[in-house]
Length: 248
Image (cartoon, rainbow, N blue to C red; front, side, top):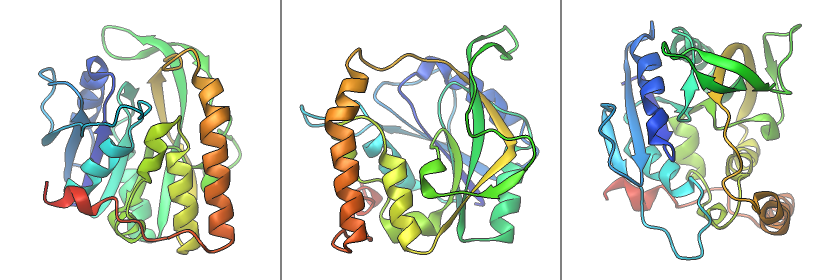
């Protein structure tokens, strides 16, 4: 297996859009793994995983879902694709092209948000423009902070080396992929954006009214502490998160 597409889902009603886009890819050697807290009957993934139980204090995040899916992948290259994403037929082939040329890089796509899709699944009415998008460059190296989980490729070897997502971020809002990428940066992995890989996403509001407040109060101090630990070389680079899901 060459590519494993991974989609932890909190909006299963939007998964048919992803399935439609996957089935029309010009690159055909792929599998699709979904983790979801609910049963899904509208799509047919290669593997459907029940989202692992969460502790009562866990904020609703995707860390456990990402790790569970990563542990079950068979592909050399992992491509993260969020639910509610529309993308053109050459996306997987472009990610594979970059991997074939350099097996030590992660590649992020860019994307904009729209208020909905028409009957054919085509996005309508842009409401947010990706600030990373550029017109004068097609492929550029970037710092780890520029990587986005919405659509990006990660060699499976990178996940094995770093142990995947730090599940401490399931207690707060976001930043889990940025922390993982900074760990990978210390392991000499590199990061790029391909501006020709462009997705269109359904716009969604914050998961809760206090999202920004929680981000400032919990996520920011956690992320700062982890970055300090990396700088001081007291933070473990090789996490054990993936191991608990391998044989489950």
